[in-house]
Amino acid sequence: MTKALKIILVSADWEKTSSLARKACQEASKEMGIELEERKEDWDFLTQHGVKDEYGGVDIPQVFVELEGGIIKHVLTRIPLTPDGKPDVEAAVKTIVEAVREGS
Image (cartoon, rainbow, N blue to C red):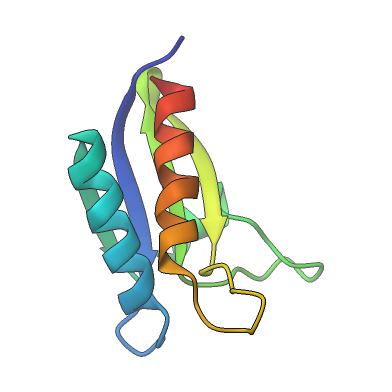
């Protein structure tokens, strides 16, 4: 299995849920003991590795895991919502941790 090296968050200061994604990534990074790299508005990275809409545009924030060999694995776009429509940071942490474990 390929080892996970770090979590990568692509965020923007103007995007409100970026702070929630940052919190989720920080918690997952701490839990898994791996580095967190935050890239601010790195559109080139998103265009190359991110999930695109039907027009080729990309959403922000997006979370990735970098694996050995330079492999970049997309983990999530935006923060999941609870059944009542509120941001679910715990679900985001769980998704990120699972992606790191799958890569490790």
